[in-house]
Image (cartoon, rainbow, N blue to C red; front, side, top):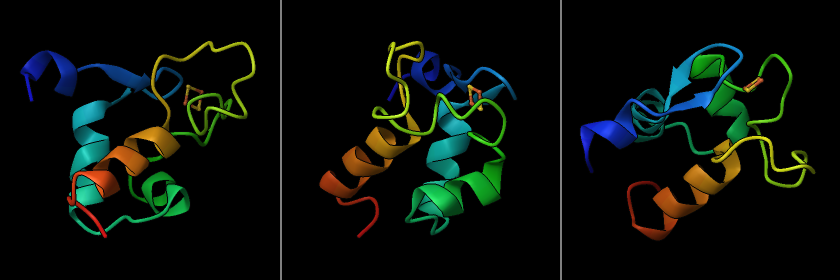
Length: 77
Ligand code: FES
């Protein structure tokens, strides 16, 4: 995982990066709600929360897809 990706701002409202979200997941946040509690990401406009809620695709990455891929790669169960 490159530093570029880690510093990518997933939550533009609150400036929360991919790296911070992965950190929360590694520390046991295994639902979108827990990631939100741990990082505050997704707690303002909500667009970064899930692909479904971001109908116009205004965010490149969403909490739900980051969590899914972390689950797929075995980082979290
Ligand atoms: S971009 Fe994350 S709450 Fe708005």
